Image 1 (spheres, rainbow, N blue to C red):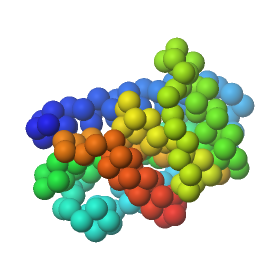
Image 2 (cartoon, rainbow, N blue to C red):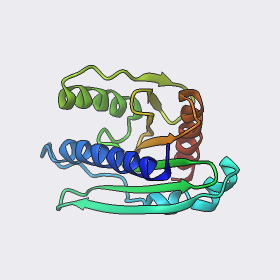
Image 3 (tube, rainbow, N blue to C red):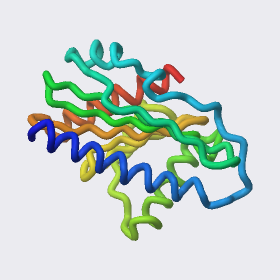
Image 4 (tube, rainbow, N blue to C red):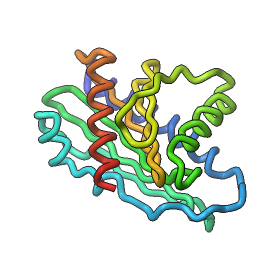
Length: 179
């Protein structure tokens, strides 16, 4: 996969995840108090990603958005390594089921099914946050702690699903520890 195709796939993944999260955030349900905002690129600096994955990464995009007066926010960061041909997109948002990472994960699965009209094919992944799951079809890991949720997408040529899952798991675990 060329770096242009990799970038296109990464942007498409970010758009799809952002659209889903924006819809999920705007349901108007009781406006709960959310966890404090976190800047994704600051929570996991590029130098940490480079050291962890033993490849030179650069930050290629960052975004932070708040949704009106609700207190809901989301932050994203994209890292790219020309050297290894890997692109990583990470989005952090507050867990809408604050204080219960497992309930947040279950609500996410239900919202995903309602939004797409399909059952989410997510394999539960142990040892990351309160609950995490891998979606092989999209190459993304979704992880929940009591206060935050993370979505990590990995794209790149020469990396099978197991390698992408391992990268996403390391990124998610390290980020959740940092926040």
